[in-house]
Length: 361
Image (cartoon, rainbow, N blue to C red; front, side, top):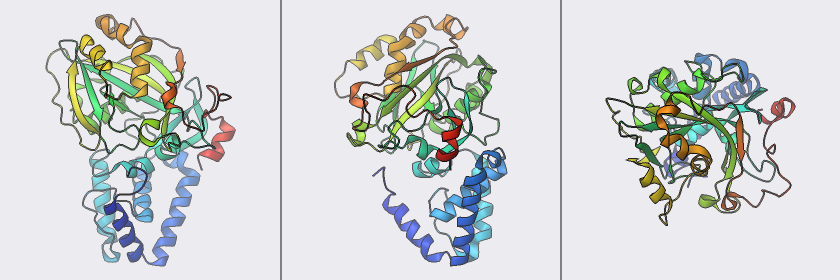
């Protein structure tokens, strides 16, 4: 299940627990505490981020890296060297969904997409939905739409192993900018409007990770920022009315057209289960098909301008439909959990700097 470690992961945690001597366990626990206390400053360093992920893996027994089947006393040096090489070779290589939930450090923002001072939370913490945190924690995200030379959109279906919104159809790629990445993915608002170089770096990274698309097919300067949407949604379709997971994002809409050579797509099976190019009419027909599930952010984007921008794609790619405002929308009623109340508003789940000091620790 997505809410608990896999059988293999559970076995790994048992092995790790048996093999770690008490002194090593205490040292790792102390290191984890230090990282959580000082993570804002530490995660600006790539080497510190690598060490953080290694500590979390060893501390909690997460099977986060390929080739690391067990943690043995006598191979600690080899494990650390191997972990460093694997981590630096490419984001997400050898990591499962739970490992990325623990290690990815998200960009917490307010309702205007301004960075919340002192706030850095894990992907897991930001996506947790419950009575105390009924809309998770608002954070920055992106949804990139890739079009081919026929103006068809590359549509994807999220893998069934995804923890949030598994198995649903959506735009080409949806993910988050992270702290601690090189190149830097954290934009300053309003200073970086409309170029937003950081969010574009994040899109390039994730297109490679999720779809195996070589960065040469994703020129940084050709990615067009279009608009931002502030939305939330509980994943009730997967988990029911008490869904423990959901989304709460200020989502950047990015468009990119490959005018000549089309990118080769090699989907990561842990991220994407299907993909295909569709025309505007194809997508409208698919929206009417019973049994197909869609991500709430994708439906919201398409209902609030997506089709119009697509129909006027040439002008959109030239910046004609570039908006500075952040548009808010609530999800369909089907994505309300039992903890989502009528008294909640667009600021529910949006942290202030004061709240961030509590939530991010």
